[in-house]
Amino acid sequence: MSAERLVIVGGGMAAVRLCEELVAGSYDGSVTLLCDEDHPPYNRILLSAVLEGTQPADALTLRSEQWFADRGIDLRLGARVLEVDRERNEVMLVDGTRLPYDRLVLATGAIPTLPPIRGLVRLDGSLHPDVHAFRSLADCRRLDVAVKPGQRAIVVGGGLLGLQVARALSVRGMLTEVVEGADHVLHSQLGEAGGRVLARDLRRLGTEVYTGARAVRLRDNVLVLDNGHSLETDLVVLTAGGRPSTALARRAGLMVRRGVVVDAHLASVTDDRVHAIGDCAEHRGRTTGFVPPAWEQASVLARHLCGEDVSYDGSRNVARLRATGLDVAVLGDPERAVGEIVEMTNPIVGSHRRLVVQGGRVVAAALVGDLSRVGLVTQLYDRGTVLGVDEPGQLLMPEAAAAPVTLPDEAEVCACAGVTAGQIRACSSLEACRETTRATTGCGGCTQAVCELLGVQPELATS
Image 1: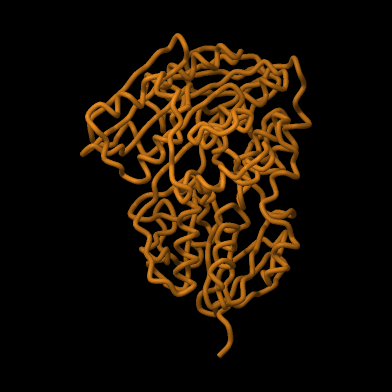
Image 2 (image 1 turned 180 degrees about the vertical axis):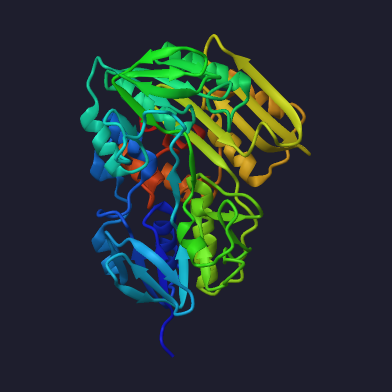
């Protein structure tokens, strides 16, 4: 009997995690990974750090071409998929190549959507030369060339990506402003109080914020808002809006709502030979939009394909703002979760903390400013630990940060990469800590929280 032929469409972070987990699980089929970009898969989370100059572009590579080759994975770069033929069990590339499959995984991610701003697009369909999208390494490189210290830049979109890009441009010396149509920045993750604190922090760092206003027209280096304001600018960066990339799935006749509808095995409800993970997948009416849920889906699917009896029942949502001078962590949905609210806000020092507690357990949290307790709060959230009556309030108090928390060596402290407390304690240098916490993902975002949680060397918490 011939080995199962598995074809993965998409070269993003979910696809790479799937390959890693298949290798770890000794998957006995053949694996082909189709990437439409011309370079090996990379960490999109760190694109703004590359733009800022705090990370080199080569640090983004998740796995080298040699890594895939050494493990028998057929990595094909610049391989754009045109169609999926479910009758013939084939994937057709734009160059006419046809690849047979026994099982197919769609990890096509999300695509940006252009906001309805007149003047963004020229008559030939191209973007205005002063307008930049920011979703890919190619976008990052184009924007990097366009950055000129002392000039003005406007970032359209006050979400996680928008704020990261705004800080990167500001650090590079541009006079940066953020335009957000909602009433406050990070409106999908934070409530009004947290949004106000974050906006105040941005202004303190030199970035003006316009909320409750939408950009409607770009004309002669002036961006016009719907509230009548006109903002002069040399550069516009679009970070608002994105949707699951489902065109392939739709043309293949798979059920698609917002994303490709999948079941507990992350298989299409139309065809159980086709799976979807990451931003393009929709499970129980929800799409993800963040990397940790995509990794969780990849892990569950890999175990399923390796023969384990596992199913996917939904992911925990974890969002982290990674930008110089700004600290935000959000667990779950703190604005909509049901439970008792424990909240403390100090706009003077730029701190906001909100816990949602149900049955003594933390079911959601938002931390802005001081993240010294994020590691502990994440542990309590992940494990569903029942807290004492006074503990939720103590978690929010500044003095609580003074005492490190003792965890057993086997306790997982970085869910992104499965890093344990013992692994962190074994780190003897900053570089070792960075390598350990980012593990196979290139993440590195948990280093500060992990170091503070375990009380290890303070200098390790600077990554």
